[in-house]
Image (cartoon, rainbow, N blue to C red; front, side, top):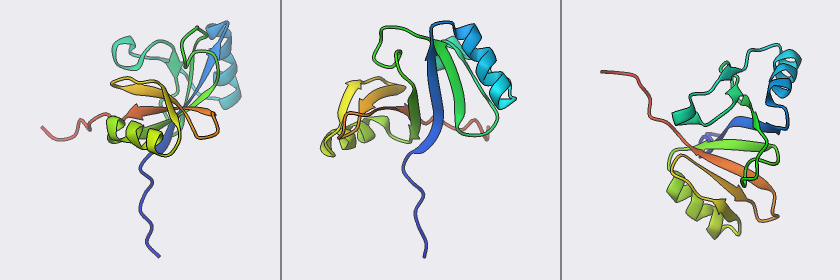
Length: 123
């Protein structure tokens, strides 16, 4: 039996924190891995692991739709098309974006989608 790979793969689990430095130390110590500072322009604020998947991320707790609870992020090749599928399947898009989006499934459980970044291989 040949099975197709899933359209989205779990790429990041992110934890908001009241004290992000303390949370960074906790997750780094627990997982015995370094959490590196993110590139603010392309990845947002906070830190995340760089080895293996899914990555673990930490950021300051905020008031935004993805800033108050832990979220699994799924990487998808076409974010706009995937957001349409979320809606068609009975889910909701809480916060659409160009690089990532916060959604809820048909049972109102929050999750996030991230646009796959192009490979830097070749020229």
